[in-house]
Length: 272
Image 1 (cartoon, rainbow, N blue to C red):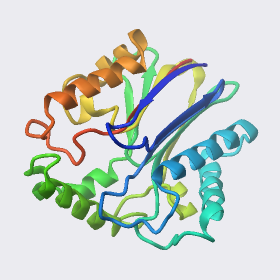
Image 2 (spheres, rainbow, N blue to C red):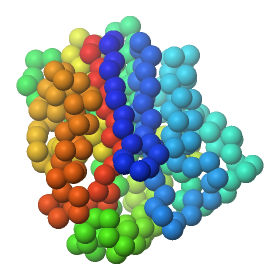
Image 3 (cartoon, rainbow, N blue to C red):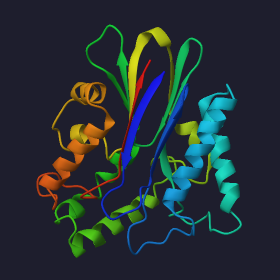
Image 4 (cartoon, rainbow, N blue to C red):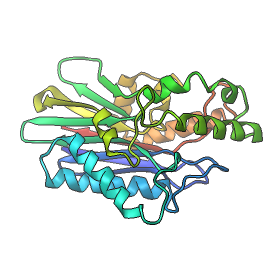
C-alpha cells in the first residue's frame, strides 16, 4: 500500500484536520471548529483533539485486528480520559471530529466513515468510483443554513450567523434523529458506516476532509472521477491548490454560499 497525503490549514487559523499513515493503515480526521464567540468547555482545543484521537486510532489499527468500530470506541474513551479532569466533557461544544479509518489486511480492505469526510474507492472493472459519505449532518443543517448562506462570507453578519448555525446543530449532535461524530461518547462509533472488500476489487482509495472535497460536492467544478484523476496524476497538493484557487475566486461566497470561505483541506491517496 503506497500512501501520499497533504494537508493545509485555512489562512490565518490552526489546522484542525489530521492525517497519518503506516504501510497498512490510514486515518483522516476533520475537527469541528469552535466559531469565534462560542465556548467549548475544553482548554485543549479542536486541533489537539483531532491529533490525539487520530494518533490513538492509527496506533490501535497497527496493533490490533479488532473491528474498526471497536477501535474507534476505545479511542474515544482513551482521549476522553486524557482531559476529563480538566475540561467539561458534558459541554455541547466539546471538541469533536469526523473520522475515516482504512486498514489493509492480508486479503481485504476494511473501512470506517463517521460524519462528513469522504472516502472514495476506485473499484476494479468499473469506470465510476464508489463514494462513501455520512451526510446526516448536512441533512439536518439544510433547514437552518438559509440565513447564513444569504450573507457575504467574512462579514460580521455572516460570522454571527455561522456561530448561530453551529450552536443550533450542537443540539442534534450524537443523538437519534441527528448526526454522529467522534467526541466524548464512545457509542458514536456504533453509528459509523463500515465495510470490508477483497483487496483485488479495489485499485485505489482517497480520503478527503470536506475542505478537500469542495471541488465536487460544494463547487461542482469536477466529478469524483476527475478528482481521483488529479490525485493519481498530480497528487494531493495539486488538489488542495485547486481548492484554494476556487475559494480565492469567490471570497465572499456569492457564487458558492458556505459557512467558511476557506476551510482546512486534507487529502490522502492510497494505491493498493
